[in-house]
Length: 325
Image (cartoon, rainbow, N blue to C red; front, side, top):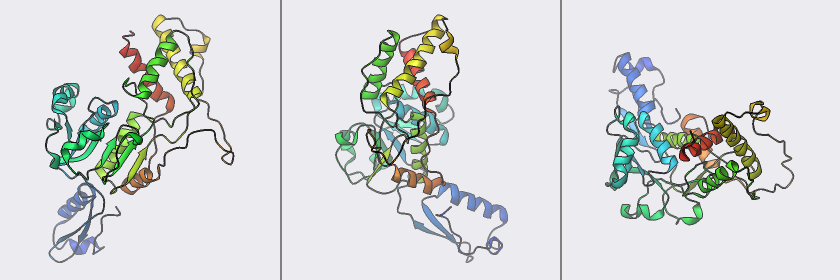
């Protein structure tokens, strides 16, 4: 509501220009459709005065360009974004596959998915490679990068970097790790655990946060990080993953034992002394992400999916991939 103002605070004075139903519809429209504007309403002939904000707003005709349309995060953006009236563009060679994959949603939103062709219609890019944007010239549209920041060139546009995304995509380092872990857990083997942990985040939480940004407006220029808030060691990640795989295999074979059926309280949460030097990788700064989301909806970056639930989805995807009935 910070970006909406009424020069005359008394609605009754404005009602002389229109009836109450028109007034209420106008206010509704201002709040939900023109979030990137400062709207002023004066008593003189009910004129609207606008001031453009400094953020980047998609508008009704903007599209989300999914250059990496097969990436798990892109699929989640489509699943969540289409019912929210977002419009997407994908590479021409991917269009039929993506439309088939989301056919049920497209029955209600038939214009939601198009082809990447017109740079003027693209408001947000989602990509893994810098050269995906070469045909768009000197675009200043926000770019959501699915690759580590070190692999990409700096630019003038807002760059959003995704870190430690939980995925089974074998083309990514994290996805390859989970495929290896699945095979080792099936053989009752334990992998060599690395020292570096991660600030894991789920596709659902990341997609929800990005769609809020896309709908409410991006800050201009610079960079922004997206990752989980809590650190998980690789040992804790493996122990949780191995337990879930063990229960999945026991369910397939019908061979449960007491350890499979025993209830627990989820992953162990330990109290740490923040004054003591931590033997872990530093978390990427989440300040800009949190502040941007907070300015849009008064709620900042607050991932809701529990770690165990995220890993359960990873295990389910792997079981499906390896055709485990």
